[in-house]
Amino acid sequence: MLSNRRAIRPLRFLVLLISLCFCFWVSGFPRTYDDDELPLSQRRPTPGVLEPEQIIVSVKTTTPNAWSELPPLLVLTDSAYHDSLLLMGDLRLNVGPFTVEDVLDRYTDSFVQDNPDMERYRATLEFADSSVSFAELTERDPRKEKEVLAKLDKYKMLRWVERTWLLRPERPWYVLTEPNVHLVRPNLLSWLGTYDPDGYHFFATPSAPEAAHTIVLSRGVMKAIMVDRPDLIPYYDNNIRGHKNAFEVLATVLLSTLNVTATMVWPEISHYSPATAPYGPGLWCDHVITMSNMPTDLMNELWRFEHERRNWPNEDALCFADLWFRFMQPENLDPRDDWDNLSSGTGYEQWNILFDRKHEHHSEKSSGRAKPGEASWEACRDSCSENDFCVQWSYSSVPMPNDNENGDTRCHLSRSMKFGQHVAPQLVDRFGEKATLAWKSGWEKERFQSWARQQRCKEQQN
Image 1 (cartoon, rainbow, N blue to C red):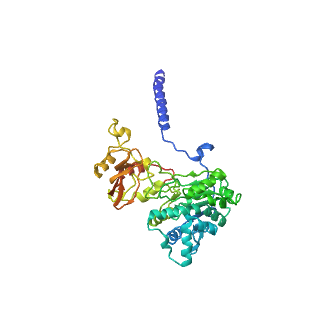
Image 2 (cartoon, rainbow, N blue to C red):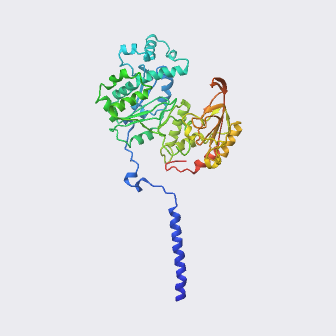
Image 3 (cartoon, rainbow, N blue to C red):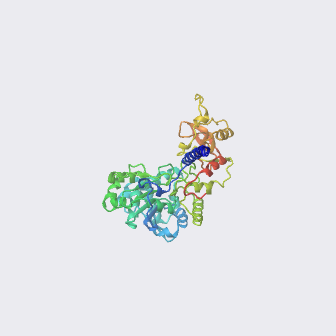
């Protein structure tokens, strides 16, 4: 009997030891939480139910571009959203059954005639009266054309807001955007459903060169400037000229009047397209609300992708991971001549990999820095391949800026993957001398793909 008890004790100890080990093993599991497991203070807001007509989308165009920009937009906008869509420009005209409003027609004749910034608007009215082709309005120099439009946009801004409210008053939300911006409507409806439309909300795209702005204003803001202060917009007419751009005009008015500043929503609302988004850990599971600067063919492909997803058994919110698997994974990403994959692009410096400097004695691997790859595109490719963080490189025939401590280099490495675009060789002025700038780009597709397959977004379909 005593011998049996002695035999049981080691067995009990063994069972206890196994139980403790199991507990420690389980406690080391990565844990994900459903919202209903979290305390109320930590749960994500439950989206309200928003119908399409509760969000007014107001699109700004110009007279010379209206017939080229708007038809693709209208075709690729589901008919369910047509009643909540407004088109704004600088001359009243029709595009099929849709009307483009002239948001500048409330300025007085004397204001239009005496203001040098309104030269384009005066010319537009004259061309309309004389039946001259509006194509002749456009400046031949693209830079000068941008300057002309930027000046006029400052005077459009507040009148654009005003006309949008007058045509569709008392709606919960107002989105001011441009024809080359694609709105992912289900995500937009879901996101805005988490906010009170009667509060003061002013959402915007983070500023970026060459970027189209998207602005979201709540009913609370619109009523405060349109109903509670009916003389506000005319009051600011004579204070517009000194502002840098249209966005600054609106931001100044909302700050001085309501003490409201813009909330920059990134990356959900951004200036990226599927070809320019910096795919990687910085934005992977984030939802996509806008895609900007979209050529028509790419906008069409995104529209088709959204419609394909509707037939998926468990359609979830479109996120950046979905875009990578749809648009980049199928691409042949062997090195490309005359291609810039934006490894050194302005606005992407946070993903640019720094090079190891000679006087630093720590290794590249320990610092995350890469060895220089200036000698040739092959050296640049090898530098990327040997750096654990690098997923793409580009090589420029002349040193180009990186917007960080690397300074000007020929080799540019990045921790995010971007597709970029074809860029033909061109003459550039570098430090007073003319030089031919040509690009070659490459990607570490297998490295990135291996990382991507290990990621698990809660709502990801791939």
